[in-house]
Image (cartoon, rainbow, N blue to C red; front, side):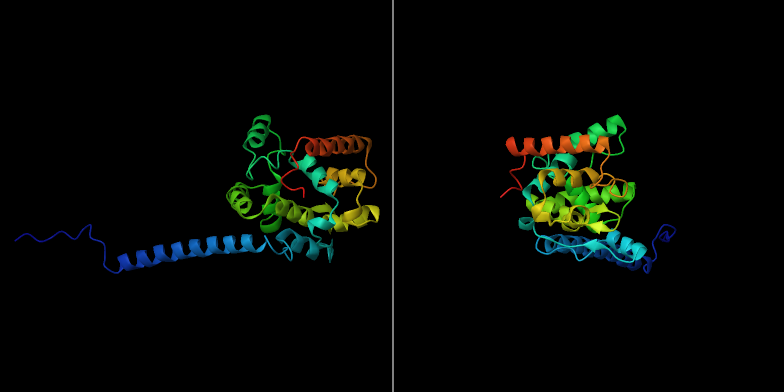
Length: 238
C-alpha cells in the first residue's frame, strides 16, 4: 500500500495560526471602521474638542486663539464667501467634485481639486501635508461624512476648525483677531477678506491685503452674491 505524500501538507498547527491572524485582522478592520463611524456620527452633534493639527500648533506656539460658535452666530455672508472662494459647487456635489479634481489633474495645479467637505475631513481627523495615503483616506471618509452630516453642518465644522492666521482657528477668533468684531457682525468685505486668506493663512493678512488680494476679495464678494442669487447657497442657508 502506497504511503500518502506529506510533502505539500500544511502542518495542523499552522492552520489555526493563520486563521487567528486572519480573524485578528478582520476584527481590527471592523473596530477601525466602527471608530470612524462613531466619531463621524458624534461630530454631527458636538464640536471637535481639538484636531491633530491644532494639537501640533498648540505645542509649537504654546497656545491657540480659537472659539467655537454655531452657525446661527456666524454672519450668513461668511458662509457664502468661503463657498464662493473654496468650493462654488458645494451644494451640487456629494463630497468629491470629480470635475474639479479632473481639471486640477489635467492642469497640473497644486490646488483646486479639494472640496470643503474634503478639507473638513482632513482638518478634523487627519494630518497636514501631501501624501497618497492621506488623500486616499480622505477620499473614502468624505462621502461617508457627507452621508451623515448635513451640508450646513459641514460648513459649521469648516468655519470653526480652519486656520485664518498663525495660531488663529475658527471664524469667530479670526473676526476678533483681524477686525475686532464677532463672527455674527462680519460685513461682506470682512467676510470676503477672511475667505481670501484661506489658501495661505500664514502668508496673507486679512486686515492689510495687497492690491492683488483686494482684487481677489472683490471677486469673492461677487461670487458670494452670485451663489445666493442662483440658488447654489440653498443647501446651507436657513
